[in-house]
Amino acid sequence: MQFKSEILTNVELSPCYFRMRITASPGILDSKAGQFAMVRVNDAIDPLLRRPFGIYDIGSSKTPYTDCGSQTYMEILYKVVGKGTAMLAELKAGDKLDVIAPLGKGFDFGDVKSEKILVGGGIGLAPLYLLAKKLADSHTVRLFAGGRNKDDILCITEFERLGVETYVATDDGTLGDQGLVTQVMMKHLASVTSPKQIFACGPMPMLKAVAGIAKEMKVSCQVSMEAYMACGMGACLGCVIKGIKHKPEQPDYRCVCKDGPVFNAKELLWE
Amino acid sequence: MGKINTSVEIAGIKLRNPVMTASGTFGYGSEFSGYMNLESIGAIVTKGLSLHPKAGNSTPRIFETPGGMLNAIGLQNVGIDAFIQDKVPFLRTINTPVIVNLYGNSLEEYGELAARIDTVPEVAGIEVNISCPNVKHGGIVFGTDPKAAAAVTSLVRKNSKKPIIVKLSPNVTDVTVIAKACVDAGADSLSLINTITGMAIDLKNHRPVLANVTGGLSGPAIKPIALRMVWQVAKAVKVPLIGIGGIMNATDALEFILAGATAIQVGTASFLNPSAAEDIAKGIEIWLSENGVKDIRELIGALKV
Ligand SMILES: Cc1cc2nc3c(=O)[nH]c(=O)nc-3n(C[C@H](O)[C@H](O)[C@H](O)COP(=O)(O)OP(=O)(O)OC[C@H]3O[C@@H](n4cnc5c(N)ncnc54)[C@H](O)[C@@H]3O)c2cc1C
Ligand SMILES: Cc1cc2nc3c(=O)[nH]c(=O)nc-3n(C[C@H](O)[C@H](O)[C@H](O)COP(=O)(O)O)c2cc1C
Ligand code: FES
Image 1 (tube, rainbow over the protein chains, first blue to last red):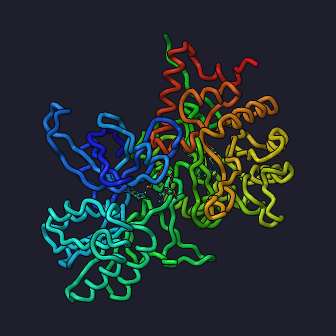
Image 2 (cartoon, chains in turn purple, green; image 1 turned 90 degrees about the vertical axis):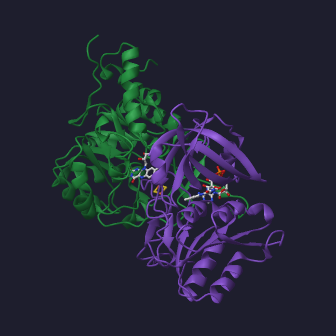
Image 3 (tube, chains in turn orange, brown; image 1 turned 30 degrees about the vertical axis):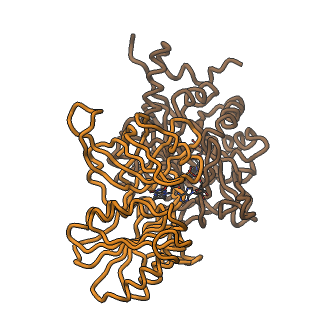
């Protein structure tokens, strides 16, 4: 669904990382964890295309802006990496955005009573919060968050407030263990024998490592992928990634926007 | 004030208004049904179809440029058989003419495609994409050689009774030469322009950004070139033209009509605004009424030079 939205808050969490809350149509409350939004950062033609962002949180709140009592909202977490995100960072409460959400397929957690292992690298944490929120009441949920340094580790206390056990690793050791988050995760996996399920989002090398560990340890694993997008709705075919059956003579391409962004790690070709 | 006429006719296909969707930017129609009324526009043009399903190019396939985007999708599509089986049933329920965009890797493929689609009653017309390489003849793009463009057009003409629109490539020295060749070979209408070949470079890695190295530029950045080509072709041929290239709003659309287009197609704009085609159709009607124009046809080619 497409809606005009108003920015409620746009806060810098740490250098280059922002959290934005915007008004949303009530239909946003049906979003699944892992789905995303296509945001038009301005009405001009530069940047031309919408930018995709994972849905961090959704909800309703009483706000002074409306007289009807409650206002549905959506939140995104974003990192400033280029033109579009730099423009987003300049926006203030009251500014307007055009948003299409929720899009794509979210995480599929069925009703299996397994322990849920969430792995987020940097801004890849974004779609995991809504997942944790949906799972925390009924499951043991653990979050493994990684980054280069402490500034890359976001919103950990929010996860803890849900009752999620958190583990942090940074390359330089400025927060949590020094090293790769995948190593911390592997240590945990090896220490428990109960059924587990992994959900991961983050940079490609991290996802590849997580998928490899999951395969080796025979743990089911879903990953949220990224690709350049133009339309976000399966029309341009610009956002494809390779499926497991991919061969040059018999290609197997999947649309990140429509078939994903969440995929079973087993379905993808990890090159 | 009497009712305003927005309807136009292209090669015998009656359009309720001059707004069509551009091939490759609107999927097979159903993708957009949740965002706009598919019965508010003149016609739907499908993603380019080939004889066999095609997987397309490696990634990255798209890249944004100032006011535009490059794409090298590589014509990924489900193929003509799957289109007829899986996509036509939905399109049949929509009361809007469907135009099928076809492309072949050889002359024979175009001929076979035209014959296949001729048997599908739901298809109102054929748009022939000639901006693709002839694999059998050293990869020369059909649309850049007047003889090859004419050969494709006359074979499609021979194999199909449906209205034929030939979609011109802008990657030529003189677009009017190809335009005339296609009309002489039997094209009922011409649409222009397809994307303009371009490229982008990643300085840091010393590499092209797109896996395919080059890609087609579309969006507002190409509008001035598209307008110029429509204007040139309008002076050179008598058949109705369909203007394409960077149309974002009703003003852009009307400019193409002044330059000589009878209808227009909305491409990249649908990516940033999925209801762009409907919005443009409405915007045209509003403009006509505000400016006291009773019939859109009064504006076709009405440019004062
Ligand atoms: C499904 C999905 C969900 C996403 N969720 C989030 C999120 O929750 N928070 C967040 O901060 N970012 C997220 N991203 C990435 C985000 O869309 C890009 O960072 C953003 O589009 C960059 O825009 P820009 O104009 O600032 O950068 P540009 O100027 O366009 O590019 C700057 C740099 O970012 C890279 N980049 C651009 N677009 C993408 C992309 N789609 N994927 C990966 N790299 C890209 C380019 O390679 C370039 O180096 C998500 C991407 C996808 C596909
Ligand atoms: C992602 C993408 C895919 C396209 N695929 C096709 C295609 O399959 N066949 C075709 O004839 N043109 C194709 N085109 C070209 C468009 O139909 C149109 O001619 C071009 O984009 C210029 O219009 P615009 O600036 O409004 O987008 C494609 C364009 C884009 C951006
Ligand atoms: S972004 Fe257009 S098909 Fe996925």
